[in-house]
Length: 216
Image (tube, rainbow, N blue to C red; front, side, top):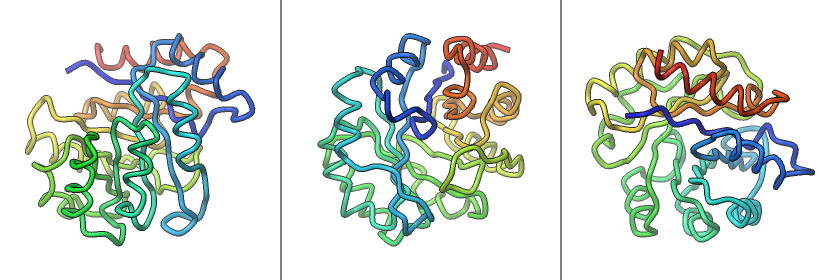
């Protein structure tokens, strides 16, 4: 399976969002990653459905929406209707994962489940055959620009062993061309990068450097 590059809009310039989206789309991005934070599950607030809908209007890229919120059941429908192609939710949230998965399936979107660095991989194993993707966080969620936590790589290895070569395993947090090598070696096939891409003057060059990791 080829490597998927998903720039994280959390690091974009929101005053020029359409231009930022266009820059990474023209630079070769495959997906766009949108982090939704509610101020409860994580100590930060980002954006809601109107911004997802605005992004949907200016791009045809696959929209990967990460719900870092306590109650994904309450908000899954409005984000799906805003244009999300995939909704991922935190296994540590307050809603029953089986109910969240069933609701997201009903809405017709792809489903991802997320585990934070302190969370053992065993928490998601009961749901592994019910989702399209696992997102393994390589930083503690809530803010961009954090340092990569290598201890999470063993989780990727176990998920890859259980689900085989074609299953989507995503990693988000401190991803750059160097840490991407560790992630891909462990079995990651979707890289989320924020500062590394949006902090660069040539977004296409960084996207190409990340993609090259998958061919190395």
